[in-house]
Amino acid sequence: MKHQNYRLRFLPIFEDDLNAIVDYIVNTLKNADAANRLIDDVEYAILKRLETPPKSTLCFSMKYHATLRGMK
Image (tube, rainbow, N blue to C red; front, side):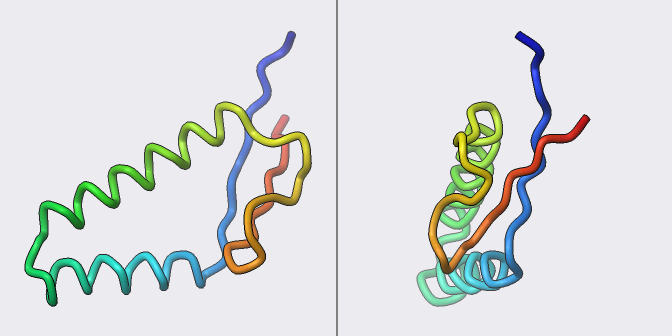
């Protein structure tokens, strides 16, 4: 079976929300280590999802609507 590459695109609201969460953790909770772990965990989850994408091209939630497209 041929291995297919995928690209995951996010709406800007995903980045805005993640940045707001990280800012809150760093500036309000004063816990930069937790913010870094969160970013690492999110990145890991995204990379794992790209390894085994859903069969549908539309996925996840309406707020963070993302599309997967096969790349040749």
